[in-house]
Length: 72
Picture (cartoon, rainbow, N blue to C red):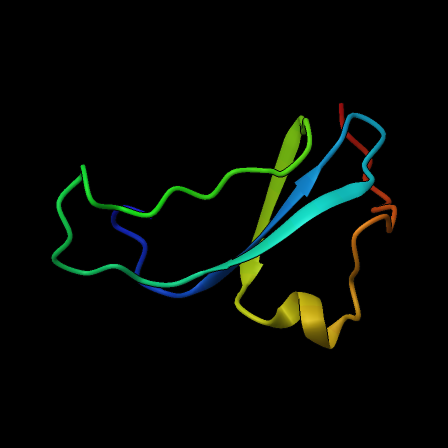
């Protein structure tokens, strides 16, 4: 997560806004571009929501949950 200054939860969603993967990404200071950890979805996804780290646990967010979003 290049240039990210705070840890984040990355919530991957499928086209129907169902949660398919959740990662908690840590800050990686002084890491070369080639050594940065890559965070990918375990299943096909269309969207990613980034929120403060561990907020998804506080919200009791789980794989399979549906996120209510309204997109243009």
